Structures are given as C-alpha cells and as structure tokens.
Amino acid sequence: MRMIVKMMVAAAALLALTVGLIASGEVSAEHAIGDDPADFSNISWMMVCTVLVMIMSPGIALFYGGMLRKQSMTATMTQTMIAMAVMGIMWVLVGFSFAFASGNDVIGGFDYVLLHNIGFDTIGMTNDTIPDMEFMLFQMTFAMLTGAIVLGSCAERMRFPVVVAFLAVWSILVYAPMAHMVWGGGLMDNLPFGLSTLDFAGGTVVHICAGASGLALVAFLGRRSEKVSIRSHSVPMTFIGFLLLWMGWMGFNGGSGLAADGTAINALSTSVIASLFGMAAWAVVQYLQAGRVGALGLIAGAVAGLVAITPGAGYVSASDSIIIGAIGGAVCYYGVILMRRSGFDDALDVMGIHGIGGIWGAIATGIFAYADLGGLIGSGDWHLLAGQIVAVLITLAFCFAVSYVIIWVISKLMKGSRVSESEEMVGQDLVEHGEPAYVMRGG
Image (cartoon, rainbow, N blue to C red; front, side, top):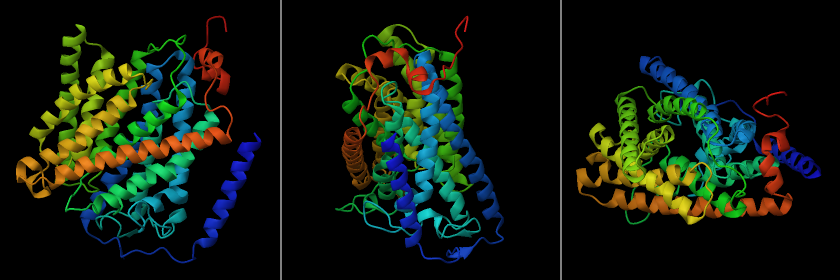
C-alpha cells in the first residue's frame, strides 16, 4: 500500500513538473479545417473507425476470458479495463507526444504533452482533412488494445498492482517508442543502405510488439501451476468476443489510411478476405494434424489471417491477401504448437498468433506490396523486403529486452510479482478482486 501511495505521489509530481514545462498559448496548426466536403466525410469515417477499434478492447476481455477458467473471468475483465485506463491516461499525458512529436530516431519530444497544440478544429499532422484531436483519439484506441493483448500472454499469474505498474512504464518505454519509430518519423523511416519499411495498421507496432513483450513476461514469470486446468470454460463467450474483434478490425485496418477513399475500401476488402482464408487454412491444417476442427481453431485461424494482413492491408491487392491470409493461418497454427513445445506458457497464444502472424505479415508486405511501393514481386526491388526483415528484428529485440527489464525492475520494487500456487488455484477473481464472475449453486 505504501508503495502505491509513493507511486501516486511521484506521478503527481511528474504531472506538475510537466505542466510547468508547457508554455501557455492557443492551439495551433498549419491551418484550420476547410469547407471541402471530403474533410467531413473523412472526419465521419474516422469517428466510426475510432468507435470500432475501441470496441475491440472489451471484445478482448470476452475473447480471452472464455478461453480461461471460470475463476479468471472477472480478473480478465478487470485487467482489460485497467489496460484501457492506464494506456489511455499515459497516452494523454505523454504517450502521444513521445510517439508523434518531433524527436530522435527512437522517441518523440514534448510538443504534445497533455495534448498541448492538439485541437479539435485544427489539422496539419496527417492528411489535412481530419482534426489532430481525432487522429490522437484514433491512435489512443490502438494503444489501449495493444496493452490488453500483451496481458493475455501471462494470464492467471501476474498480480494486479504489478499489472498496473508494468503497463504504465511499458506504455512510455516500449509502445510510444515503437509508434514513433514506425509512424512518427523515427528509426524505421531512416534505415541505412536505402532500406524502406511499411506498416499500414500495426504489424510491428501492435502485433509483433505485443507478442515479444508478452513473451518477455512469460519468460520472467514462468509457467502456471500444473495443478491448474487450462481448459476453456466458455467457448460461446470466446466466440462473442471474437465477433467484436472481427467487427472492430474493420475500423482498425479500414481507418488506418485516415480517409474514406479507395485505400480504405482496399484495406477492408483485404482484411475480410485474409481472415476467411486464414480460417480455412487453419481448419485444413488442424484436420490433417488432429483429425478434427474445433470452434476455437476456426476463431484462431481468422484472427491469424487478420493479424497477417494488418501490416499491408492498404498496400496489397485483394488477390494477394488470399495468399497472405492462408499462409498466416497455417504459419500461426504451427507457431502456437512451437510455443507450447518450447516450454513457454503463453496462456492465450499472444506470441504464437500475434507475434508470428505479425512477422509473416510484415515480410509478406515486402513481397506483395504494390509495385510503386517497392514490393518485391511487382517492382523487382529488394529494399522494401530487406527493410521489413530489419524492422521485424528490431521490434523483436527492442520489445522483448525492454519489457523484460521493466518487469524485472518492478519485481524488485514491488514484492511478489505473481500470485502464489494456492492463490492461483483459487483464482484471481476471488483472491484479488473478491468478485466471482459466476454465482455458484446455493450461493
């Protein structure tokens, strides 16, 4: 308790210092929104996409919770909600600025701290048709979702106060730098030897980053007790969560072009097609390997296809998305098996699906991107493909290493980073939250 109070005092002091550093002034940008009808169609589209992506985080709670024991349902919902809160708050305070303000190759500066210089009626940061504040809010939903995905890897193990502390630090030292390096004019835009990179909607920033960060948590915290059942307690709940994710992904990928135009249509088309072929490929492989196909397998295959297409959703053709999605489904099936055989207890296959699928998707973008973007097949140029591979390696190394250091340091400051075996068997719903998700008979 004393540690939490100290952290709150330190946060208040940091906030006060930050406010003192900000010069007062009116919100400014290159110019205000004009009367072009395209402005308002883009604004409306991005508002819809923002809501769709925000729906994905509650969807994750149901998606993950259904795949765990019934004793972990409340804990999963609670951790998802606190991920939204912590990631969102840190995004407003400093995260957005560190991601998109001018800075060095790794992290941005302080220009947008506390959303200074970010207005609802000004533009200039993106494509000159949507307000800067709308762009900020859209990107905030990405940060929330990524934090929630990471926690799926170490489900049923990490104490709630440690979850809060980890997310607060991770949002600033891992997520914001990744967003800056890829989308904020950082390292990925300044690779040597003429190498280039593309990430339409978060293959590296969201999926590979989440997979590598989750793997670091699993490596540090260790496996769950062998006495704990790992069977899904509610497949229908997982299915409902998946439907929310699937629907939200249309905003996730469809809105990443920041306009209601042909690129958005292309992104929506490739996303749907890739998810369908990812589902089919997973089903085929699972049937050949296990002799049966389950609902959870079909769901996992669709998610794998969505992850795989995310880096190139607006950069590849619909026909190429068939290949990307199908290979994504098959690759992630074996990726999940590999993770389980490796000894890592990646509870909800974050690395196996998001990490492996993101890696394939990033590489596939270098292969299949339109010719004018430098795709290998269309242009014969290898610089984009090589750049994509370099980006994957940088993301894996950076996110794993920094995440591991963060959880290691926190474990030294906050005693007991994971629940005990006896607490694990009872479940975090009761042990940490005192709120069972289901009322037992006679209760």
